[in-house]
Image (cartoon, rainbow, N blue to C red; front, side, top):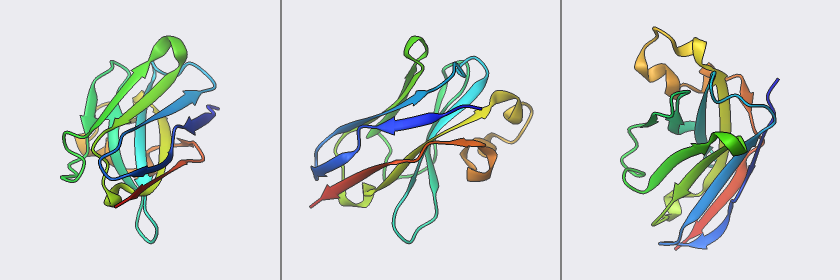
Amino acid sequence: RVDLVESGGGSVQAGGSLKLTCVASDDPYNTYYMAWFRQAPGKKREAVAVIDDDGQASYNELDSVKGRFTISKDDAKRSLYLQMIDLKPEDTATYYCAAEPSLRFRGQNYWLRYDVGAYIYWGRGTQVTVSS
């Protein structure tokens, strides 16, 4: 079992920045894919970014976040990050950290990493609110 705890959310004005952090209870990084998802009110949960066990980052093809969000991790701190800049009101959502053993993705379609159903471990989320 892996427990994930997010932090760093808050309320900012458009154009502002936030850095989300997810701390894992165990050390999953050599064997896990880690991801950030978000869910806005009334909408489906969607993947934002993924980082694999080799540290390779990938981003879902969300035009709205391109160039503004950066995923990273610190293995020594068992932490996953999402740096968000130039925030927009449409970024308002609950942001979730997720983890899944990397074996799940071996030999699978690239896009599986962005599938909500592919992840077994989830944090409780941190709220990000961006006002115009």
